[in-house]
Image (cartoon, rainbow, N blue to C red; front, side, top):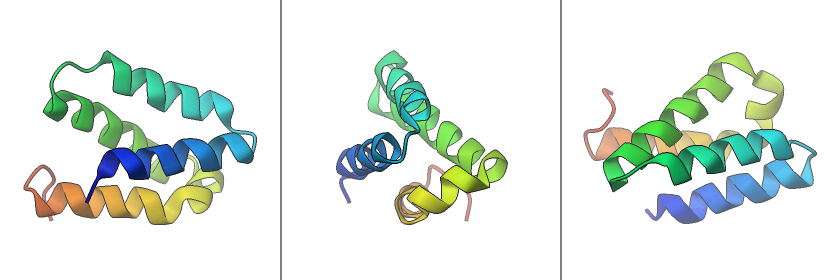
Length: 80
């Protein structure tokens, strides 16, 4: 899986649905990390927060968020 491509799909969907501020927040998180692992950790934290706290946004990008979460589990970054 190329989670960067999935992240770009998330940005596109959020921007198209009028959630550019959330898209920007995620993107700024992506840019603030140093290593790939740090970036993934920042992004996954933001995506889990959306899933938990913003169900109206989550439903728009559910497939992509769940895909990245499953990827994190498959590589041992997240507990199954």
